[in-house]
Length: 374
Image 1 (tube, rainbow, N blue to C red):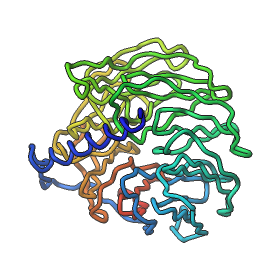
Image 2 (cartoon, rainbow, N blue to C red):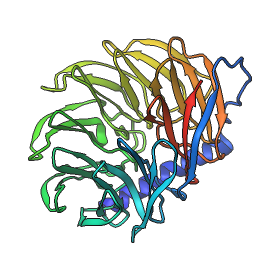
Image 3 (cartoon, one colour):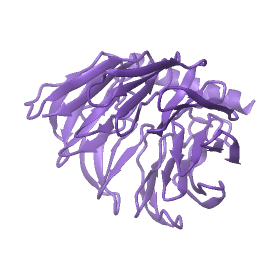
Image 4 (cartoon, rainbow, N blue to C red):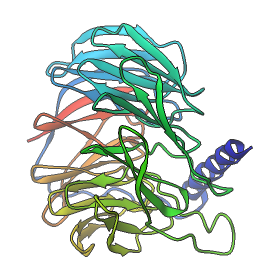
């Protein structure tokens, strides 16, 4: 029953988003600007569409491994995009791909978790409590899987056997999301419904600390949704999370002590890079924050209501995708546009990922693009 309510909440919110585009304020139209950089496609490949899921490829030293909703698992040469191998996963894939150069891991809509070796051969199958909506993460011999009912399960990477499980009570309404976990130095960081953030021990699943990013506010259950729907971002100094209809907050990653917070709502997530936090808020505004105190360094409001993706920052640029399949490059110093390109026209839902001196992007319709900015 709880999971039915979770699915209902997801449908309510997704329908609300669609209706806001049709009957509410329209997405901000794109305007011309003087380009000072240019996107260049290094290679592209067709994987198969992601359907209603947010599917991300995995990148290792020599390969990119990507998957479609229909279970087409494909390994590509990371330099050329040439197909190395293909295999058919016998389930509807709703989360993936995780792993490393020796193992690729995907999750399914019935809670199945399957692992494949470097040649695409099935290593093991396991099962968790409900559908896997996010990327299974792997570190130090443990595969960590987050399922749609907010359970987190640690699996033995050798055979898929369960090592530990962490679960917590959830409110009646929660946002359906593709949030996974973040692993750093033997700790697993995750955000939850009602604005909670926790740190767990990787080997045992024992809770190291818990704190609150955002308190639910409002008179109705919908108003009081304040869920963390994206990955926690972590470095040696801070663990930061942002809540939908809530706040962004940073904590000491070892002890969980609060460092700062401020009111910003986002369902897309953030990127933490050196001294800065880059994020797209719930209205599509892209901004850079000082990670030491949360102060705004710059913001670009020209992508309002365009379902702007989580930013990817590298070199002198911040790159985001939108619902029409555009990639936008912004200057990291002040946020002005420097380049734009259109991919296959379908939404860019996941964040661009680091690939050498460029990026890798998977669209909803299942095209995979390796790009550089010149």
